[in-house]
Length: 244
Ligand SMILES: C[S@@+](CC[C@H](N)C(=O)[O-])C[C@H]1O[C@@H](n2cnc3c(N)ncnc32)[C@H](O)[C@@H]1O
Image (cartoon, rainbow, N blue to C red):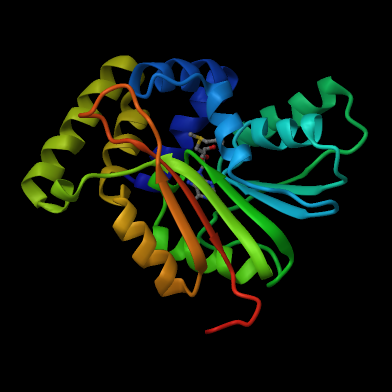
């Protein structure tokens, strides 16, 4: 199976019911509602007036919608996602809400962002890094951030044990079987192939440092079961003076 196509197929199929699915999965795995997740990522991300914001893997646009609904600030927001169907629902959400100011949505991969360098004050990414090659994501995020800009991520972490091939294979198999029965073959493949991308706080810190980020903070957030990987709240800044 092609990992890339399976991921797009999985999210295309899920797009019309995305918020419901993610809400029930977050409640089951972490004991969080989807609303709490959105509150979490935004509470760890201080925004300033007129910030230019990029929401990577924006999905159905829930994070940009919350920023524009609750913020007293005048932000310009761009949303990027690889799945066109998710963006279609994001656009629908904004047109239904009758917002004057709507984000600009772009269908592209976060591994190769179609943006100029040094344009964003804030880059966000929620619940999606596990589907990506993290070094490419961080290198692209660093490139598009202005000096002094912030990167803010909330996603599932990983266990050091999962670096052992036999254990990683076992965990991937459990993920595959669970999502095959609960969802479908594409989703099962997308989640099983995401397991090697899950990182511990230490590996996140070293990847961020390696890309040149500074002021790195990684918090392990509470989760319902000790045996399910915990959510991580990750923040880092691009230095004012580029060290690269
Ligand atoms: C679980 S959803 C998260 C959506 C949204 N951030 C949220 O918090 O609700 C994961 C999203 O990541 C997107 N995605 C996965 N790989 C991507 C990539 N390489 N580039 C851009 N988007 C990607 C998927 O299309 C999907 O919309």
